[in-house]
Length: 386
Image (cartoon, rainbow, N blue to C red; front, side, top):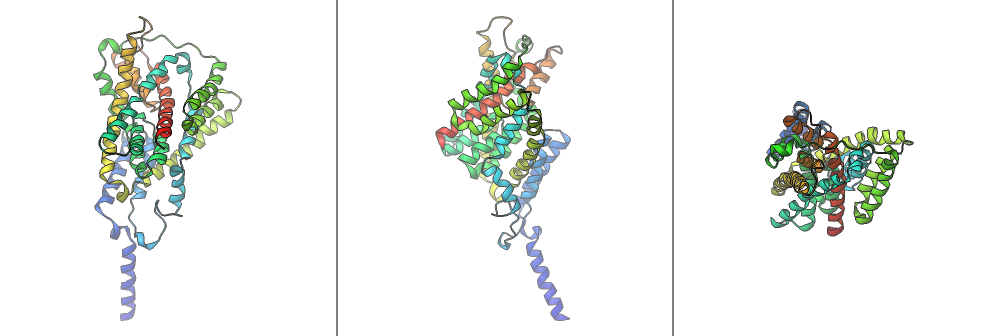
């Protein structure tokens, strides 16, 4: 009987050593609280639920403590584990182009085609990327790390993941979570900046209704757009090529099934896998570092600069436009590529000051230009820094 009890006791000790309770640290619980916060914001506040719920739950999955010496092969950083295999879509950079394929298949570029000068707003908003890049260099990050961090200002999670996987894989978890966090916080961050840099006179500017865009123009746009942008920045081909290909599937009118697949089941599947694995990559030992805190701070600065740059550029541009052709500066925030949330914010703030002034159709122009602009900016950084 004594031998049996001794044997049972030894096995219980071994079992305890394998439990999460025995291997937990306070850092694990901090990250678990962060994951719960993400899920709360998604469910209670409806902040980007399709992003924050997979990421938030991924954070919970990635911070279940286990004995690393046991060779269980369940962690995302353990080669051969299921999570590690799924995470290769992030580290190898093939989830983001597939996301861009879906974005292209669900995006209507008509607002941009009908008023091409709105593309300049999308370009102006990319100052946030290069501003954060310079600041990151100033505080001690290496050039390739600074480039990966700066892309957060584009408010484009897939682009941030794609670029960081190439330039700074060790910082990818913090960069990806930061980018998606600020995308979700668009309704919180952007309105104060928009109000701060505009006057009441600016906010009630009425824009001409966009002209009707022909089917031929819609079909030609992705072909011409891909050729121009990729000849200019060949390193952006994986993202830009897939974006314009998805849009051609949508606008051609003869590949509706392919467009529906790309904009529906495919992008949903990739979003689930990307969100879950990015969240799981935030293991406490890898994530809770001083660099992560710096990255979140730089991400906020980048996003603020991008929003302010878009708004201020419109005010500057209006100096050269005749009365009746002026642009409402409230659509300047939409130059970041958080589609369509930043365009919705333009609409919401505009209606506060004039309940009959609908800006959404106009804001979608710089919004989709921001998607193109962030991919071009990523291509430029990749070309210079890789």
